[in-house]
Each structure stands twice: as C-alpha cells, then as structure tokens.
Image (tube, rainbow, N blue to C red; front, side, top):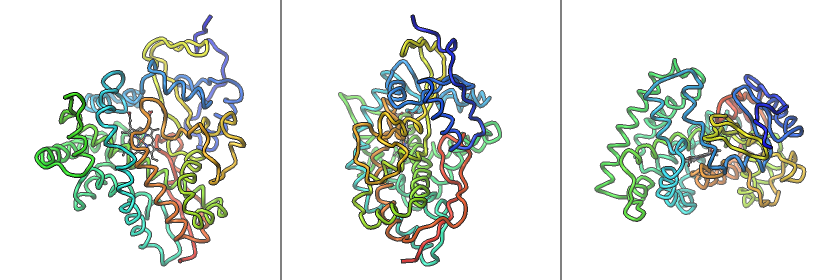
Length: 404
Ligand code: HEM
C-alpha cells in the first residue's frame, strides 16, 4: 500500500537563509537517511536516480509558474509571462515547441561561435592582464555572455548594452523583492518585447545565418512558430542563457583557484577543457536545484504525492552521489566521463536547450584564462551570493596571478 508523503517520518530541511555549503551538507545528511526529505514548502529528493526519475516523470510539471504566487505577488502580467515561457510549458504544447526549436540549438551552431567566444574573453581579460589582479565577476564573467547571446540571435553590436540592461532588470524577478521590483521588470520586458518584434519583422523578409532566422525558418509538417512564440523564445534565450553562464564561469574558476595544481594542468593541457567543465559543474553548479509540482496524484517508490505537491530536486547532491561517482567529493579534472552525466543542466523534457552553447562558452573561457593567469591565487575572500538565489555563484571573486 502506498503511503501519502506527508504521513512519512522524514528528515526535515529548512534551508532558508542558510549558506550554500551548509545547505549542501544538510542535504547530504538527509540523503543518507532517506530518499525523500521534507521542506517547508513540500518535499526534496537528493539522490541521483530519484532526481532523474522526478525530472523525467511527465506527471510532475515545472513549478516556474508558481513563483509569483509563492512570492506573494498576484500580477496578471507576470503570471501570463511565466506561464507562456518554454520553461513552464508542459505536455504536447511543450513537445511541439521543443521539436521546432531544438535543431536551431545544435552543437554545430554553438561551435560556429567558438572563435568569437575566444575573442570576447580575450578582450575582456586584456583590460586587466597587465595588473596581475582582477575581480573576475565584474571584469570577465558578468560581461561575457551578453555579446555571445546577441551574436547568436543576430542583434547588432551597438544594441548589446540594451540587452544587458533589460536582462539585469528582468532578472529582478529572482531578487526576492518582486513587489518592489515589478515596475522596472515590466518596463524592461515591454521594451525587449518591442525590440524583438521589430527584429522578427525585419528577419521575415531577410533571413540570415543566426538563431532568430533559424527559428523563423523552422518548420515541421507545415507547422511554424508564431510571432508570439518567437518573441517568447528569444526572451527565454536571453534570460536563461546569460546569468547561468556568468555564474557558472565564476563558480568554475573559484573552484579551480582553490586547486592550483589543476589550474596549472588545464593551462598545460587545454584538451582537458571539456572534462574540466563537467567536473566543475558537477562539484559547484550555478543551478543547485529545480522545482516540480505534481500535476495529478503521483505514486513513486510506494509514496503518494497528492496533486499540487511541490517537489524540489537537489541537483547539487545528486551530482555528489556516491552511487554514481567513486569518491564523489574528490575534485579531479582528469576524471573519465561516466555513463551518468552531471545534472547541472537538468534532465528530462526541460533539459537545458542551451547546454551545447554553455559548454562551448565554458570550454573556451577556462583554458584561455588558465593559460593567461599563471600562479592563480585568491586575492581576498570570495563573496558568495545568498544560497536562495536560483542562479548562484560568487558575487565577488578577487584574484591575483603572474602577468604573462
Ligand atoms: C552553465 C550555464 C547554464 C546552466 C547551468 C543551465 C541550466 C539549466 C537548467 C537546470 C534547465 C532546466 C530547468 C528545469 O528543469 O526546471 C535549463 C533550461 C533551459 N535553458 Fe539552460 N542553463 C545554462 C545555459 C543556457 C544557455 C546558454 C541557454 C540559451 C542559449 C539556455 C537556455 C535554456 C532554455 C531555453 C531552457 C528551457 C528548456 C525547456 O524548458 O524546455 N541555458 N537550463
């Protein structure tokens, strides 16, 4: 007989306001006790196989559209916007969209931008190189992804600053003061909307070699994306593809800065870039978890989650599961890939659409920085963002190195 989840005797987690390292320690302790833990909003799964099982289970839906209500905001504009996002869509609607857009996000499309990625990181780093010191977040990580996304979409260089400002303002959704930030969020979203609509109108008569044109041209058995869908996808790419990449780059460098032997190894052997990206994302992912809501009564491992139950998946502890990696805590960029991929890009139908692009961005940035920053060391304490922010990493990463 299956037991309702709320009747189980489970480890209890209350991680609000708790630092990331402490939160991961508590999640790991819970992982040892039971496959499921209780949290103030619902439940948490902490083991690799269970995280994958929840993320692949169509009976669990994305919880993104619940965010405004959970923050105490009942704004129609925001509600509609969140619900329309690919991240919140489910069922045949989501499947249709993924089928149409997926080819435009191919590894080949990402590879095409690699020389441009090297150029952008190289130029950002040139500005600080002679001094032998930098604050990597402000100097390199923050500005890095916007030109790449703009180039990918096909937005002209003179407009990059606009995209950067819109992304910053729209990201206020996650800053914890949704009510106070709402006017700025709405204004930025409206401006971005207008801009993208104009861009789409232009491309419709003049297709080019960019992501927006590829999405306009995408067709499957006579089906095409509507203008509203194209606008939503462009905004999703801007929103999902900037803060994630910049935080992940900072997390990855912060980790490598604390393992100088592996930093030196990466400088010497740039062919380790791909393994270094997977291993740093496994140890310190910018996205530590994602949430799902039971769309119907769901029975899993003899436990019933009534419809409406919130289930958090801990990507951070799944990535350190001893059932999947020998000595999971050992950080080693020469680790051979296993059959279980690290989960910082998620799993299942919402698996990150930009994973090839993000991997390419990190694979280009890390060895370049390793080569140009020999003798890397922390130049003061790392300031971390509060652990409750959805996309997490260092707020400040002061570094020193021997100028090459
Ligand atoms: C290191 C950087 C990145 C990380 C860690 C990351 C992580 C994730 C995760 C965990 C999800 C799934 C969320 C869920 O299941 O609730 C996701 C979805 C998504 N990501 Fe990424 N992402 C990154 C970079 C990017 C980039 C560069 C782009 C765009 C070019 C992008 C576009 C998307 C989109 C559109 C989705 C939604 C897919 C869907 O719902 O079907 N991401 N990402």
